[in-house]
Image (tube, rainbow, N blue to C red; front, top):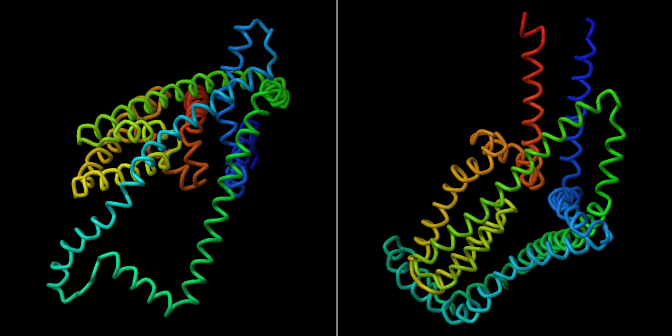
Length: 356
């Protein structure tokens, strides 16, 4: 069976795509900081170029890159500092409220458990005594489990610290050499294929720009939504927690999870009742539904031409294939794949296979 040139070319590109997925999956933890830096460099390089244009080439690119990276790090630091007022206010209150919360829990649960023949004391003194007794009788097993947890937690902490240091370094060099890097990649394309590749990258660039603008709108909208929702329930720290939850959504699931924990903690310490769980369930549940099924598909999906179901499927599929890295690159990669699918569709309609 003889394959045509088009079929051989398609098979070669398919093999390269499969190989790229396998490499990303195998080297995911190693590539994570570089992929994050590449996405940030793609988003921030236009600002560096804009500074070059404004200053008419008088500002060295090195200074422009340093200024943009410092500005970006300052913005990230401001988002992180939104947690500070929460901790400053809640930690002293926590010391006073936790014993009271345990007393209330003991007063409500103990009579209910007694109906089933369970006699459990939930006050802090008895819990401390039970913990000491358990550790004394299971010292070796408890020490082994604790040591394993410390090793796992230590390795995770080392990875996080390493990535936090590596991402700014990689971002600096990528922004500094972005044009040269793109030129070298362009030189690898065969001359006869360059017009098609240039057209493809230009369309993909437009789609990705629309994605970034849509994602920014989602973050700002959700920051307003969470702040307003928590404030309506009377939470004193509604503004910092709501703004942090919304703006931290650029890291899928992680920002939402941290904001959720902060809201639960602040609600329990301030209300000391089930009102905290009602507040978090109503605000964050409605927020997830609003953002996942309406806002992101409308502001992000429609801007890049993806159907809302395709957006949801992309997040789940890339997360399943590549883990956290897949979640980060899910929608940008889907936007590029969309451009490829559009061109394949146009080629199929123009082919003899369809017309015959």
